[in-house]
Length: 441
Image (cartoon, rainbow, N blue to C red; front, side):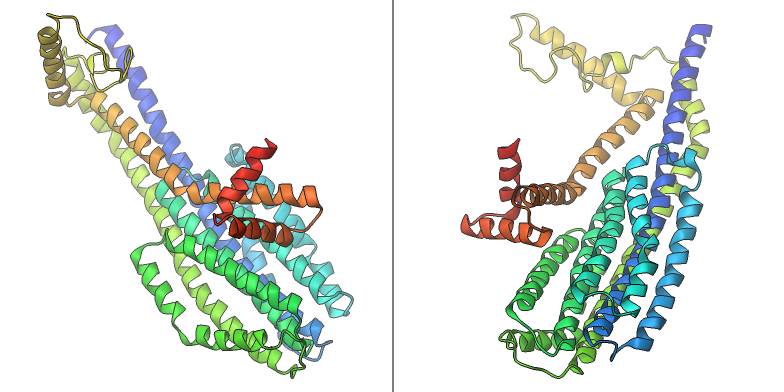
């Protein structure tokens, strides 16, 4: 082999190995993000429970759930400590995070909210906050934590992992709507009456749950899908539906025994805890998939040296062209049908046949490079498909923000505007959202 050819092969090999190393590093970061998502999910679950007991405690003026609230705070703090350890372990090294500024930003916002939890708890303990305000405070923090899951899904570079993250994000979002339903129901029962406003809010939350769970169901594997279908028909859902129907009949403000608030809370909590078991399974699937991806990439990297050396050796003993004469690779006027001058058709056909034979028969270093490139292209398409649900949610969120700013209303009211417009025009919320964005743009 000439010195020039050796240098070319060395450079090609070096960049191929560099690509494999970059892939491994990306997957390792993805694995860290998946571990973070798991910790965030656990923390959200405890915050949801704390929000529920705090609502009953405030709405009943301290009559119900005093000790239960204290025990729940202890559990929340325990999981919070685990989350902080995960953050320090995976994100404490600044060099490890040079490409994750978006994720770090949403983590920072969430941490700011966590820092303020002690002050919120003091207000609750001293009965210095209204149920609506404490519910909103917890919801804002949980939404910031949900942003972490959303961002982890949005920046994920592997389609298989992205699908799991999209499913998990929508499941946790649906579970959060269920938690808010539990909170508002507890408020109504603890206050000994409901009104049309609370009933409307509960109906909205039930509809939002269904929407999130529909997206979740489109992205899960068969095993999780079977468990989800079984969950939907279980006892806790039937019991909750009975209480939902009771609440509908109380929209006129009729009085009801405040003791039922504990019954409502326990049934709603049982349902959410059942959801949590599916959530735990999803996070386990996520972490396992991420670990397997890292192990496979590491294995390929270790085995790659010998495979590359063998391929380069074959290249050295062959005079075959690869990239320069590969008819499947884009060249001049690619993919354009041209009329060929008379007399050239046979010559072109013969040349193509010869080149195709060389490319198919020659198992070279070029084949390895092209295989890697084809794999990346395939992953890109799959990734775009997996992220479509996230893109749709971004569009709706942007349209809501525009409505909120224009009409000076809150998020729930903005979403209701979108819903009403979609119903009036017999179309989807997504299409209405796209129309609003395009009109302003």
